[in-house]
Image (tube, helix red, strand yellow):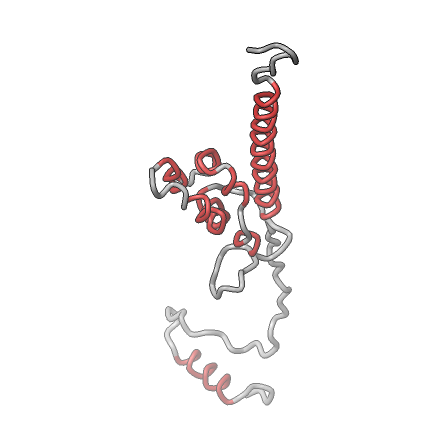
Length: 169
C-alpha cells in the first residue's frame, strides 16, 4: 500500500476492492489533497432606514423616544387631531363631564397613540407632522383669542354714547 495514506483510508480501499461492483455507496478516499473551494459571496441586503431601530428607556419598548414627548397638537385640537390620526379615543372629548379630561390624556399619550394608529415613513416624518399639528393648534387658538378681544373692544366702544353736555335726558 501507499505510505502517504492513513490507516482509515487504507481500510476503506480494501473494503472497496472486496465489495460488489454494484455497491456505489462507499466513498472514494484515494484522493488525499482536499479540493480548494472559492468563498461564496453573500448577497447584499438593502437597509430601508439609515439608522438602526431605537429603543426607549423602557425595556423592550418598540417606540422611538420622540413618541413619549408631550403632544401639544393633540391637546389643542383634540377632536380634529383624533379623526386625522385614527385615534377614536379622542372623540370622547364630546362626552359631557369627562370630555375635559381627554385633552390632558392626549397631551401625554397622544404621540404613542398616533404612532400606533397611523403609519409614518420615519421618525423625522412623525416629528414634522407633530410640529405641524402644534403650530396649527397655536394659530387656531390665537385666532379665537384675537377675535374675542376685537369683539369685546368693539362692544365697549360701540355701546350707547353718552348724551351731550347740557341736555337732560
